[in-house]
Image 1 (cartoon, rainbow, N blue to C red):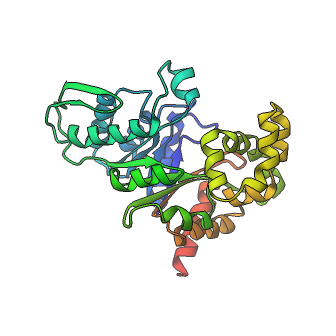
Image 2: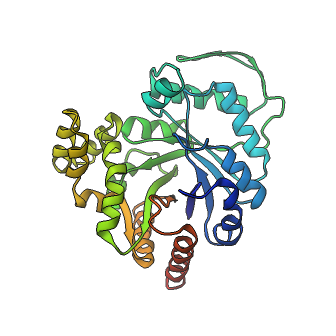
Length: 321
């Protein structure tokens, strides 16, 4: 199962309709939206639900500390009412997003995710919620429109503690910045049967050097952020990333980006011609991913051409199996 992350770079949201109707709905399993400094994660999904009724949608992900718990419950209820299978991916985000951009305290992020999961489970039943959780309190909240078909609750998870939470109190995990071989490690920390979604940057281009030049400034800062640095160390890339991390710590951003090895990019970013990309995506599925979330970023190939080529390659691969 392969879903797509929207919106595509350089394409206005209003211009996605034809892509959704002609290419995405016939060839891909779902549509997802993330939330950082682009569009919010909910509006694109509402548009997709109108353009392609019944196509599964999901957030990947929304931060639990930039919205109040009741607002998250109402958002999930609204998405569920659109009539498509819905997944609500939630996560801790970062101090930049939560504190610098939204003026909210970034405190006890793992516990906040856990408490949000517990609150949502109760709120979706339509009962009145008055509860004091470890990280927030709710008094007399009731969804006036109870959720008949509640969204699956997914947790953004990079390391064992959050993976365990995703499997015990959530319905599964969304992870990223991993190779197929990394999933063998990740799966060991997730409850058997829990969904495991992998968010991937995919660049259908045969020009490997161009891809590496384009993604290096995107990937390097991520891998230097504390949560991702800890994840990569856990996965065994400390030696490969030592020079990048050292330069970042010294404030030499350009040097940190330049030091990111090609080998790490090739492990974490799917690129090559469409057939190579399809083959690489299959490796993730074979390694234990329940579903893949493909982000066509950076826009090295025009989205229609990229989607068409990737869809044909995936179809051809499926027909030979």
